[in-house]
Length: 67
Figure 1 (tube, rainbow, N blue to C red):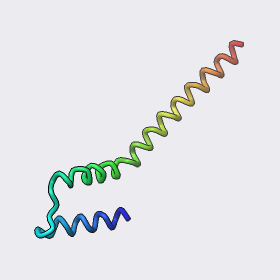
Figure 2: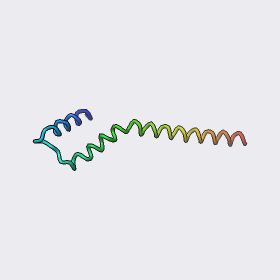
Figure 3: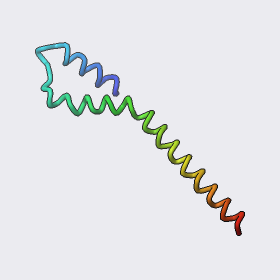
Figure 4: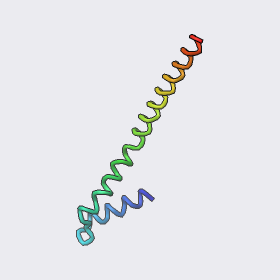
């Protein structure tokens, strides 16, 4: 479905008769940019959560050791 959208956009962009207004292209360009960034955003969030979990586990183990 996403590939179909890109194919239509390329067709519209290459055909002056159907050229889209720049204001309509901005959200599409933003969506394309974010589609390419999703993997790295998820990877960073997973690393952050893993680091936070490790900190919490270490703090709990330290409290248990002191107890």
